Figure (cartoon, rainbow, N blue to C red):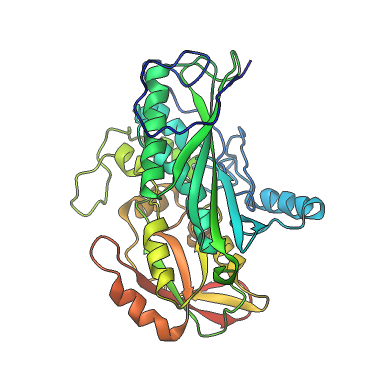
Amino acid sequence: MTTSRVLHFLRGPATSPAPADRRRGPRQPQRLRFAPAGDGMRRVSVACSSSSSSTSGEDEGMTYKGAGVDIDAGTELVRRIRKMAPGIGGFGGLYPFGNHFLVAGTDGVGTKLKLAFETGIHDTIGIDLVAMSVNDIVTSGAEPMFFLDYFATSKLDVDLAEKVIKGIVDGCEQSDCVLLGGETAEMPDFYAEGEYDLSGFAVGKVKKDKLIDGKNIVKGDVLIGLPSSGVHSNGFSLARRVLEKSGLSLSDQLPRNDGVTTTVGEALMAPTVIYVKQVLEIISKGGVKGLAHITGGGFTDNIPRVFPSGLGAKIFTGSWEVPPVFKWLQQVGNIDDAEMRRTFNMGIGMVLVVSRESADRIIEDTHGSNPAYRIGEVIEGEGVHYV
């Protein structure tokens, strides 16, 4: 049923085509209709999928739960898992190893894959896969070392799979880690024709005395946001419902795009930003106390995960420019602000909690294609408050 791959380095070109029972496989990209399915969330936010259809009326605001993804159910599962595995809960799992911690993370790309099938864009979805895991482990200050992938399909299409793996290699290069190996699973009758699923696993290291764990965060610390490229790899169950409601095709121009010519498909498929190099450079200069990767759960659920008990966040909502794709999603879906902030990253993919003394320097040091914004501050009281 499944075909295994021996762990190996994939930096050099293959000397001969990979046999069908080793790695990957072709099939011409096919135009597929959208099918309702849920997004992957974090494993501290747990991966959730659903095929349930929305029950909201035509004029009611659309929600993530109505699109089939119940974040609260995922949170409850994590609570139960913690009883069996008390160490979980952060963005990455820590394993002591000499004077270092190994930091591990795993994730997928959710139903963004549905848009990859529809658009035929397969060469960047691997970047998303790497980003989701390495961005998680860098929140501990860890340098990614290696990455493993899992590629599953009903019938291996070598040409298509090669494109996916190329994206994974690109993502590894962007994060200075090695694609060490993985697994190809060919499972007839399990997936729809032309479809596949992906999972990724990253491992990094950080010295024990350099671990960033949020324990030193205090009231008055500053929140700095690093921009996203768009939707990244979360919220696509809701985004696809909005697209269906809009009546637009993926090849139509994105409305409200500030004069920039971008199709709906290009805007939604923009690869997730890999923050590793930028974040590690900022960390090396001091002042960073905590980091939150803004994925499923948005600001509302992810920022509090790095705070000590009794502290919360005040977010200055006008302090950065929200990308047009979010404005379009909100308008067409009639989605309220609270739902948007708990589903999407809203233009900020990584949040750093830094000392007040370091904030100005960090912002001044970031410029050009890697800007940073002062988006809020740490306050007494729990939760995230928007002003």
